[in-house]
Length: 106
Image 1 (cartoon, helix red, strand yellow):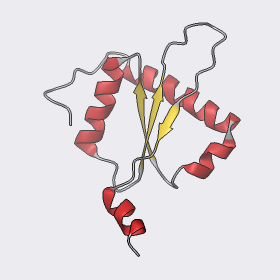
Image 2 (image 1 turned 90 degrees about the vertical axis):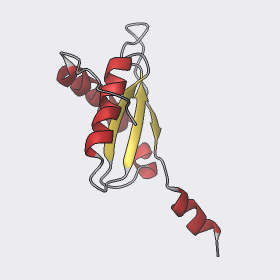
Image 3 (image 1 turned 180 degrees about the vertical axis):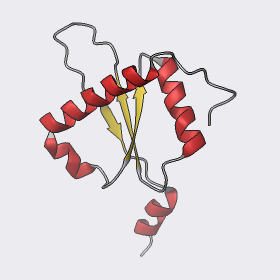
Image 4 (image 1 turned 45 degrees about the vertical axis):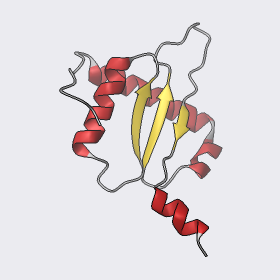
């Protein structure tokens, strides 16, 4: 997936923790979203406006995988344009082609 070595941003842990906290806040404020997410999933944070973290997180997924857990990708803006803007992630749950074909064939 990632090509070459991706440099680790110096404050990656703090930035990823903050973004994960924002996603958790969104989920707790919108519990109905959990109905659409798989159980025991691996969350991959992909900030739209922070290519360093996005590439680093994808590189981690590529190197370490999800240990057999379903993956949920969360696209999010890491920097709101206005202080009053709430951060709303877009959540994506990829499904394998085998699952789609298996359910389509009867």
